Image (cartoon, rainbow, N blue to C red):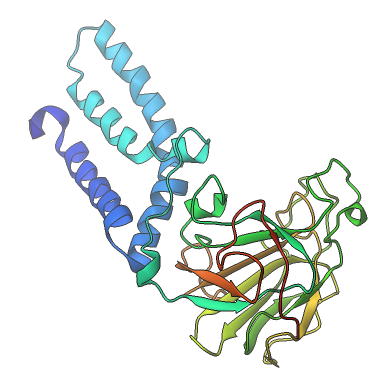
Length: 289
């Protein structure tokens, strides 16, 4: 059998199978790296290569030549590429994190007024972030009005709203220089845009907040912050369709590891909703410092 499909195809197939097992069965950063490879990188190689092999298979078939090696290669490419269906929305696969086994943190709400959860929760339907390991438990927060067709950032309810630190900790990095883009455009310059990264004193893990307004950040690297301290204002910088605050919790230092980081559960206290509020819920803080 190995001879028919080709030794190279067999070995590569075993390696890809190992990556699949790691992605869905191994926890921690090894599982994260394997999952990201399957979801984002392997399809970029597998799909074009599969198309070439299919054409090659057809040509050899017409010429009545042996095609088992080509079939083996097509099978290997299919193993590399199956996660493409999650990227185009045909199948939803949540990153298989065991929430209860992970380091979680419960923090204060980052605003002092009613906020809408644009994306949040534990399923892809409620929270598209759940399909990615590093932002597995992330939230996108907006305010009324939102999800409108205006390209004017000032027409959105959360534009320039003040963001307060949800935790006590140390600021490990900020960026304050990226220009905000018009809502509904795709003139993206970075992923997070202007951001604040905080190492949480309680757990030693990290809080990431992004898409802040250019020039609005009031803290700097090395600052110690208390929960409730002013951090900056909501903007529309980075890869963003409209003004909103992105917030997530991760294990690794985001200045060193972002895409391959392990996302951790993030809960909120002193609000009128569940500790992990889901998409569409209006959240009102019940205790304001």
